[in-house]
Length: 135
Image 1 (cartoon, rainbow, N blue to C red):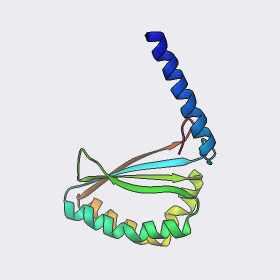
Image 2: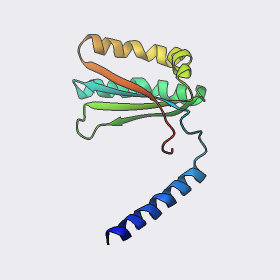
Image 3: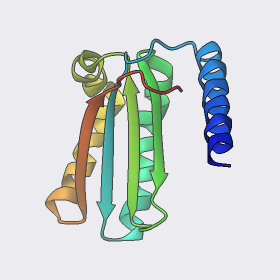
Image 4: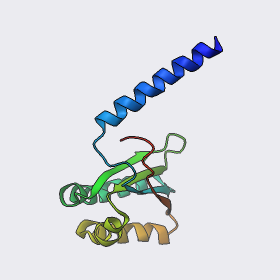
């Protein structure tokens, strides 16, 4: 039975590898990713952020073709935490283009006020994809 389980697992993994490698068009390992967690003290501040960030999202969608993925989610374990995942073609696209976007520059100071007032904390990390998966 154990040998049969290993064989079945091998077949399943082989099928998954083959199907994912033929359907994905991205270049593995080429994206730079930024993951950010926003922790709010009050629901009203979280909602203010979501409303404020609408224009940033619209601007990114329309003017940043190097931005591959830009999504905000709410943590199931803590409804006052939002998690943002950003995927860029290159780290330099984030540093030299995204961070100087018109709407980003308008909205970011509003977050800074919340931070300075102790209503928001922001933590994050970044990484270079290794190409050991698929999108």
